[in-house]
Image 1: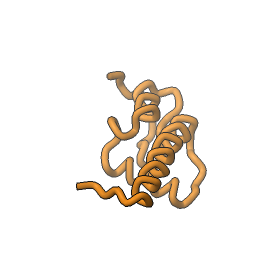
Image 2: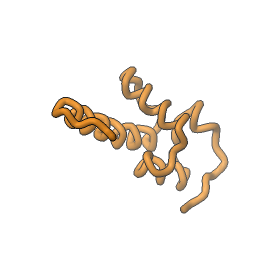
Image 3: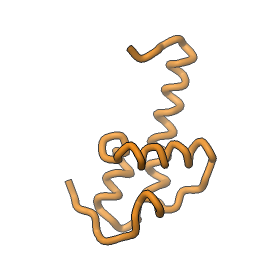
Length: 81
């Protein structure tokens, strides 16, 4: 696990470009982001908001793909236990 460099809050400003830890979060958002940051990403995707950084764009792409897969499963009748 890498460390964050000093940068503004990711909740307010998105995942920071140039930060090794934010890069990890962008690649594996489900594993590294807390509930508040995940909710923020989901809300930005649902609202079709622009990403605020390259790292946030990458994270939004990963989450969007998962949301699409979940929708397909739901449409086919799968429900979590």
